[in-house]
Length: 84
Image (tube, rainbow, N blue to C red; front, top):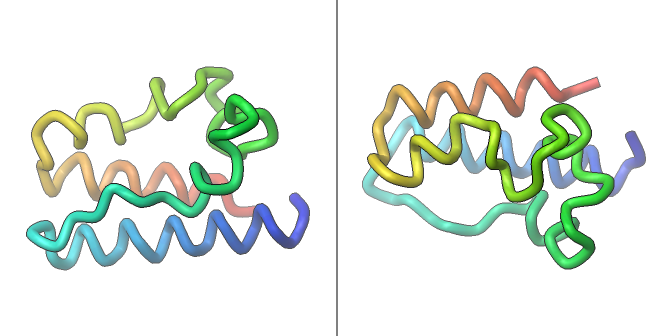
């Protein structure tokens, strides 16, 4: 994983830690998406793991619809599993 991707992954993990601690301060931004969405997610560690674009096979999708703390924690754990 190159340094730019690692930095975006770490920033995404930090964002989901904040969401887990304070669900009312939800932000729709994603450092990984900011880096990879424009190129169809190619190179994103989420896409590399799941082979689905736009986080379709991650806990993010369930969280998006219900903003459940359980799904936020699951997304955090998923992203942490992508660390080298």
